[in-house]
Length: 405
Ligand code: FAD
Image (cartoon, rainbow, N blue to C red; front, side, top):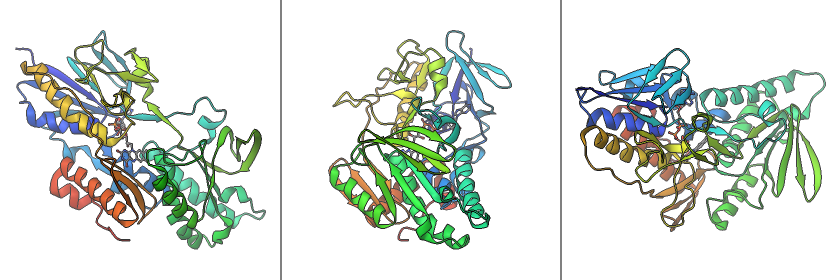
């Protein structure tokens, strides 16, 4: 009997959880499971803002694939995926081409720059370990250079974060903690550093109600963050950012623009011709594409709608992890002829960190959390994920237990 070849693209939240479930559900004689990822590690994308600020070392965020995937049951290929050929049932990698019977696409997100001039060339993004590390090192370099240059350039100490959504606010919250440390390290007066958030709408954190958004703004302002709201970024240069507010153009000198005002699905899915809406693949309720019986798309690459409102679900790790259960179940059904299940997103809770010991969150859309309670809840849910992924050993190695400081 022909053993089905199951290929999983991407070892992020969706891909790695699907792999781990499948390695338990399918016997090696039933199917050959292959996981392809650009690196030999999985990373906690939800911690990248901490790596980018320098408050958490990137080694904590990386998890070796061999530590969580059973390589006796799963073939792992470390390679860059270049394109998917759905009709030919092939995936082109940088070093080889592979065939599949069943494909899972879980290639995550990319920054969306909406064609704004200069952003792609001059702005930093927080999209993977290396982009986070680059940003951290750029900050440190500018602090070191400022102190040493004869003619001081204040733009080196102006840090602008574009976007007041989840990533932008979590990052600026970490920076508010990190800047006093950097100032001390590089002998710079804290008053010389500006942390500025530029946001197009009138408030921040649209995921939360007005009360929680105001709490977040007040907490960050108290730690030195400036907000420029109702301001639309129109241009980014190596040493400034231009925005429009009240019909007037303003230019802010900065050597550090961090673009966190939008993400889109990995562009590989759009180029694969899988039928996209706003760059994401429309999927059936069982997570397969509308056109192909044996291609699943999940996580940030899939367009999934809220069953009550019909609106697209925001791209979150929470949703990608939930989907892995259904995708793994449905793949097993394809292999051994069982029934397909439908994916129903459950929004359990959303918590945005505002730095080390402050956060805002809402649980089941009813209970509001703020301050240290929200921080504890967030760290607990992150620890829960580590436990699901790699059991007690991984939890003890990578978990967050510094709950109250
Ligand atoms: P990802 O986790 O992005 O994984 C994609 C994988 O594919 C990666 O391993 C990548 O290396 C690999 N890959 C990509 N391209 C290629 C290629 N060409 N070849 C080979 N491999 C490739 N969500 C929450 O639920 N809660 C939060 O608190 C939260 N906080 C966040 C904070 C930050 C700073 C960021 C950036 C995101 C946050 N998110 C949060 C969103 C969450 O991280 C994403 O929704 C989630 O990572 C999506 O999972 P995924 O499996 O679709 O893709």
